[in-house]
Amino acid sequence: MQTYTIRKDEIPKLVEALKEEYEVFGPMPKRTSYVFAPVTDPTKMNLDYDSTIMSPKKYYLPSSQTLMEVSLKNATIEDTVKDILDQKPKILFGVHSCDINGINFLNRVFDGKYDDPYFQAYKEITTVIGLNCLEPCKYGFCRAVNKNFVLDGYDLFLTEISDTHYYVHVGSPRGDRILTIAHEFFKEAKEEDGAAFTAALHKKHENLPVALHIDNIHETLDLAWDDAIWDELGEKCMNCGSCALVCPTCYCFDVQDEVDLSISKAERVRKWDTCLFYDFALVAGNHNFREDPPARLKYRFYHKFRGAIHDQGEIACTGCGRCIDACPAGISIKDVLFRLQEYWAASPTPQGGL
Image (cartoon, rainbow, N blue to C red; front, side):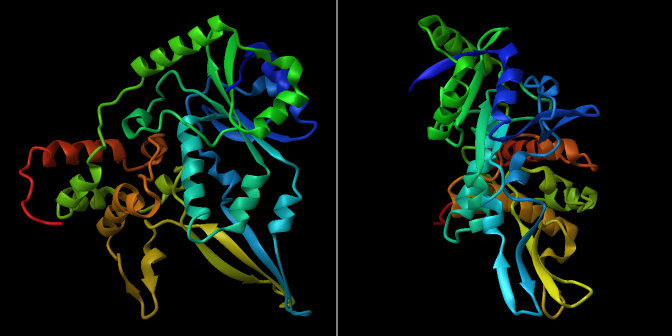
């Protein structure tokens, strides 16, 4: 794999060069935190950010998205896939490993048994420039869930190797394309650069905490099905859905048909939804499979750490910690898992079973 270096002070110039062909989004300051937003002034983009309020999943799965437009007058239907593909190509600049892993997980969902053309269209026009985390963020536990590194899902990947330089891995032909159109900013890596990269990874390994272990998390949850913790947390949970909205892997949505007041046209709209909302599991006959708050909170945990393993082959958590930060009730997904494992690991394993 060919590797390069780039000077930190060249990043704003690189972004300006890329903006000729791409719409660039990166970590931009917002009050006391950061958000992925259009980079209007590259000097204000901060690659030393710890986390963003929302994950970049919104660029693949918008919170509200028109899937098709219907003319009731002419009896015609047009989907919006072509509209997405006609947009200016996008670059997501400075995406951390946890969020790249989140995008990879969503791709397993929307490019799996049921292919989603809208997600794939956004994927087609989006280039990802990743950024290694060498310091822990406030609530993150990515190393505990093995999401502190990425093997794919990026086009370029930056690692800080000094106060002045980033080490650059190329992950795809799209990454090569960036090197071609902005070649003046990249230099081929030397042997000492490779040594500095190795030292940076050692630093990362030492800095990231790993108090929680998830090797047997599915078994732990099987044992904890009737644990009193679910009723305890259900009393605290406000079912506001904040945790799902900021999560990189939550993908549940509702589809609604919205008719114009003129009754001449309509739109089919996809909107974010979450299993924590009361009407998520509401069906005809006014029956609700998860009517009580504890049942909804419990379902979210079991889907993330049990059901997702069955359906997508891995847990649906990247350890970004956003849900902990966003929860107004102070519920920590990390502390809940740690508490369950601490208790059930000390309990005798039931005999028999599958």
